[in-house]
Image (cartoon, rainbow, N blue to C red; front, side, top):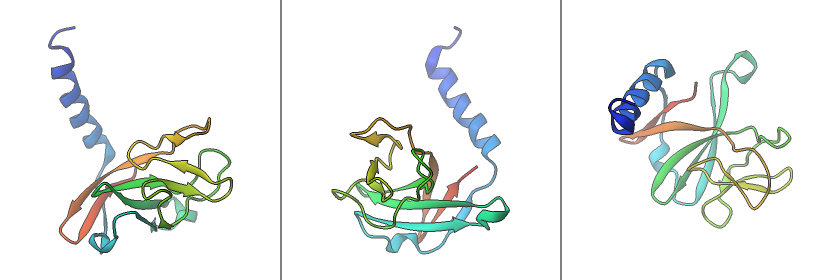
Length: 127
């Protein structure tokens, strides 16, 4: 392979950003405290919008699809389990908001979306 991973990875990141479209601005996310999650709707979920859980863990903000990949439950807002995991209360499954990986159970990953904090708000690339 010419150039190796050092050349290909930045190019793939650029291409993914180009295809992902424009970000959606979510206001007031700087007020979300460490170890907490907040559900947000981007557009009308019945008309193609999306529901996310924004979670602050380790000083960073993450966006997780609100629909649990296990059986379609909805991730909860409020305190993160153990201060760092988003929870689906349907079966009490926990997900790492950084990777979407299920913790301690055999379950597909939850979808995570790119987030960038901008002042008091954040931008999310949910599609």
